[in-house]
Every structure is written in C-alpha cells, then in structure tokens.
Image 1 (cartoon, one colour):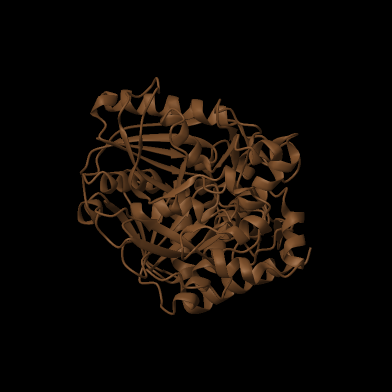
Image 2: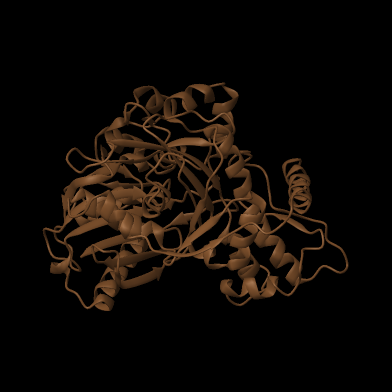
Length: 496
C-alpha cells in the first residue's frame, strides 16, 4: 500500500491507496487557526503533528491495514508556511507563519523600493511578496530573542511543513526539503536547484538553518521512533500541495494544466524542462524532479498563478456573515437566483495574488442594490472565484503561447457544479473533474510509488479516474459582459 500525508492549511488528511489507485482508507483532522493581529496567520506545529498522527492512525484503521503493510510514504504540504525548530529537541521556537500571513509586507515593499525584484525574479522565478518563505524566516529570527545567534551557532533548523514532518518521522535524522518546496522560499536558484548565496544575503537568512534539497521522487529517509508507524517505512515522495495536485491529475505533458480550488485557488501548467520566465504576472516554479533511476524527465517546471482566497471566501460567508451553516450549502443558496443582478465580489480578503500582486488590496463587493439578497451574494462569491482563476488562465496562455485544450480541476470546492460550470463558461474551455477531488494526496502517493520504484508514469496515469466534463454554455456577448463587470470591480478593489 501507499500512504499519503496531505498536510493542508486547515487540516491534515491521510490516505491509504493501492498501487492501482483505489483509496482504502481516509481520515481528515482539522486544527486551530491563530490570528494574533489583522493580516497575521499562524499555526501551532505541535497541533499539526498531532493532527498528522491522528489522521494516519485513522486512515490505517479505516483501510483495515497495519503500518507494516505500507510500502512507501508520500508527503504533500501547505507550501510557504515557515517554521524554525531546535535541532536537538525538535521543538519549534515560534508558531509557524502561514503562507497567507501578511506581516512581512512592509519588508517586501522596502526590498521592492530598492529595485532588487528583477534580480530576485531572474534567480528564483518568484516575485517579492509576503506570501513566500524568505522574509518569514528573517522575521522569526529577528522576533525571537536570541534566535539569530542560535541560528549562527547551528542550533536551529528551518523548514516548510514537509521538512518538519520528515524530521519528525525520521526521529530527527533527516533535515530535507524537496525541490518544489525549496522553489517557494525566494532562496533557491531555479536553474541550479541549489540555495543561492546572493538571495541568502538579500533576505538575511543564514545558510546554517537550511535543509538539504532532494528530488520529489526518490529515497529520502525512513520512519524511526514514531509511535503510530513502524520503523523502516521509506519516505519516497514529497511535493508542495499544488505540484502534487499537478502530478495527481497526470499533467505529464507540456501544456497540461490544472486548477485546485481549496483555501485559495492555484492554477499550474506544465512547461517542460525549461523554466520560462513569465511576462504576465505569474511565477515560474519547479513542478517535480525525479531521482536518478526512477524514470521520466529528471526535472519539470511549471507556470503558476495563485489566488489567495477561494474556498476561504465561502468560509467567510459561513463564519463571518452567517449566510450558510455549512460550506456545501453555498451552491443551493446561489441557485436560488439566475444571476447576480450585477453584483460582483472580488475576494481579495488577503490581498490580490497573481497576476496583480497587490498585497494592500482588500475585498470589494460592487453593484449592490436594495434588491440584493444572500443568494445574489452567494452566487457572486462563486463567480468571483471563477473570475480570479480566469485571470490566471489568461496570463498563463499568453506566457505559454498556446491555448488550453482542457482544464483539470480538483480540491474541495470543485465539487460545486455551479462554480465549475461557470469556470468553463468564462474560460471557454472544457473543464474536467476526477471522481476523487483529493488530487494533492493522490499526487503524493503517486510520487511515492514512482520514488520507491513500485510504479511508473504509465501506472500513475491509470490511477486517475474521471467523473465529468463541463463544456462552455454561454455565448460570446454574455461572456464579454461578465468579464467587463469583473474588470471594473477589480479596478475599484485596487484603487483603495
């Protein structure tokens, strides 16, 4: 069996799968979100670890298999979330700073004002934004008393959550991150696939805290001293959640694209072996890397566009406004009206990501009248998510110089037929949904299978089963009117 650990922003999911792709057991455990100040988001790493333990134990129980039945482990994770811990004790020195957190936005503004962003983009493929890990690491080192001195003495370790889990699962033996997660730090040279001394100096990060960079598929370490798993299980797959979803959707050919609708929305396109620079506000990232002997191209890159808020906007309607009791109720509420009647919602609740990169933008609702109801706002929220993704896809096709032949979708919100149909309409492309929308965990398992040489790309492709294809249904004039309403709303959002 393959065990996938999918450590996400709001919870941890474990999946037990066969090599043929059948899910035998699954368990999700949520954990607390911490918001110490407006715009700040933190996680307690010990709570994350406990959620992983409970999820893995629950998935094994649900599958009715023992830990000794697991042939390989794959890990996928919320990517840019940043943690530093004591190398001796394994204890974090501060709560993890989550990818959504905007506390380092002033530092990013300062660096951009110095004119260094072209250099950063050329080396790392990224823009300077509080989204990425580099400025988060420096913030913890500066904020925690004595942390910089301890880091210089080699006492502290940095990692995104994948590295933290690998370290814990191996009993502290392995300190490593895979190349996809390393490519999200602002510290890795995208072509050399190695930490870059110039970026380390720019972002004030000591090399002493950094993990080893390893391929996404291949031997990484083995379990040791973990109460909920036996010793000796190989960890052979790691990828950041969006790269894992790209792999989990079998986007193995150049031009293949997917969008994951989770807390945020993330569109990625496979661009092959060359890290093409974006000219339209996207970033270039590593899609995956295979270790020697595991088959396939050794390195694959992707264009990526990120919308920071997607499913989180629905959560806001539920928790902040009380419009629905459960997130799944949003579709039924939205279907009570045939249109938004001119209402537009730009869900920039944590700034605007690609292609705008406006970290000071805030959510905006336009077109409200006396006749606006909760149903109109619900529908505008779903449409706003689809519009955000359309912005990403438009930039992507311009950068790649090719039209999409199809868009593969996954993530919890992709179960919403109204959202997915509207996505097909505004993007004017076939949208393909798999039977299981947990593509991140599935992708981690597929990478683990390849990394352990238990399967290959052909076998991985067969693990993906399709549910439904949504075709565009609206005419050119209606689509143009929708997009014009969206563009006007975005302009008002950005002018604040």
